[in-house]
Amino acid sequence: MFRTHTNGELSLKNLNETVTLAGWVQTIRDKGFMIWVDLRDRYGITQLVFNEETNAELCARANKLGREY
Image (tube, rainbow, N blue to C red; front, side):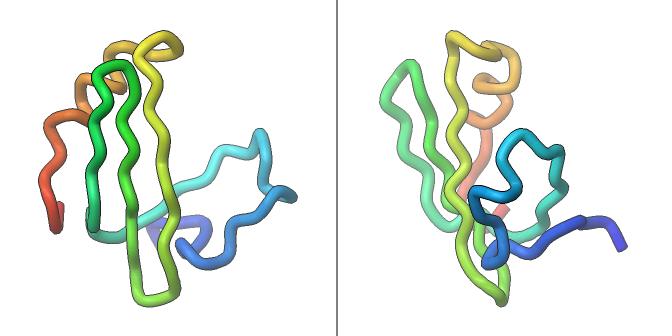
């Protein structure tokens, strides 16, 4: 299987773990320096946060996402 967790099962116990998720982009909010992406699957929604100060390249890639990607 290509994912380690579903979107509904992540919690604080997974803090600082590397996880692989799968799903569809439901919502994207771009505030210029941060991007929030709601990733959903049949089990729930996980909010992903991309910070330009932490990783500018990853933030630029997240900015190219569209709904239902």
